[in-house]
Image 1 (cartoon, helix red, strand yellow):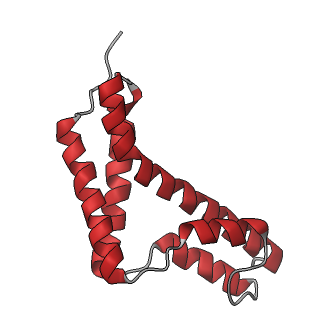
Image 2 (cartoon, one colour):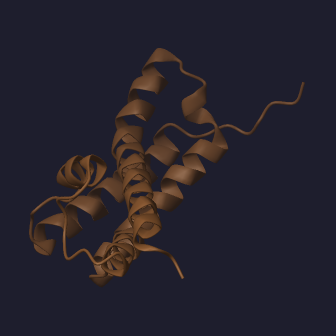
Amino acid sequence: MLDPAAALRLADGLLGLHLAIVVFNAAMPPAIALGAWRGWRWIRRRWVRLLHLGSMAIVAVQSALGDLCFLTVWESDLRRHAGEAGYGESFIETWLAAALYVDAPLAVLVPVYLGWAALSLALWWLVPPRSPERR
């Protein structure tokens, strides 16, 4: 059984991971477009593109089903385990949560998520990843 302090540290870690995933998912389409124009090789790495496409697929499917992100659910469970009812305790919790959790209805967020996932998929064909070259 986790003690409350450890549960809070894990919840803060999940919040940080969640923010990193959001930034990755949001930044990749513009980075791919800019990278194609500038000749950046890393934007054509298959594993980076698969990671992005898979992550966006999870977000799109969850939002289309009306489900909360599993990271949000785990974080919330850890905070409840620690005896917290909501946000406002630690620096990480307060500021990352404010940056991450958008106060918008699902009817707005679902089309945004699905559109961003469709753009990510379209970029797979417009700026295709390359297989690793053998040396």
